[in-house]
Length: 236
Image 1 (spheres, rainbow, N blue to C red):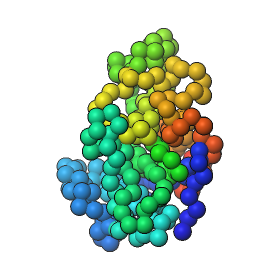
Image 2: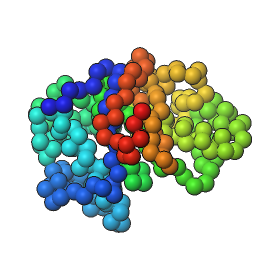
Image 3: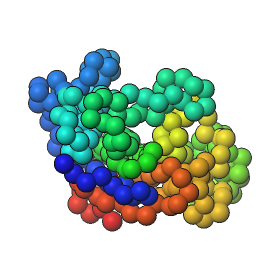
């Protein structure tokens, strides 16, 4: 059984979906909701991305617990904002008491899993070809003011950094993106300051991607350990 990360630290697992080929047994480990979601995708590439991500998530979590991947039960805590059932995912089955916290993100060919001792959020995004300038309308007004004042290409880069940080924070808190991204500043506050009650750091990423991690609390992100890297240079 793999040792769990210390408080204020996290293990990061990068995967390239092009090298992940789930077997029938791997797909059988997915639960009913995961299988239904996979079956809802119209395109095979999207279905493969989802299946690869969730198979690898289960295998990663299994390595921290004495529980086979197919026996892991994933539930959700209530949304802290509206009390709805779609809050942060957590392990809920036998053997998971006191188990690790986790977050999953995927974009393009990249899958990123974060495992931590406290609530964690991770996000990865493939860099878009064009400017995401319209996103400033979804930002906190302080962030929008800072970013719109930048020239290109600095503005483009700042928007991507804002996006992955904001998504990571919402995943950490469990408040869905449907509640909006404009309720808290992400990039306009003091450097290194907590964001919406979370410590946030960038994550070294494969070329063409940007990623960020958020950990609950204000103690900072003390250590990130890359357990699987794609490519190997993705780790710090």
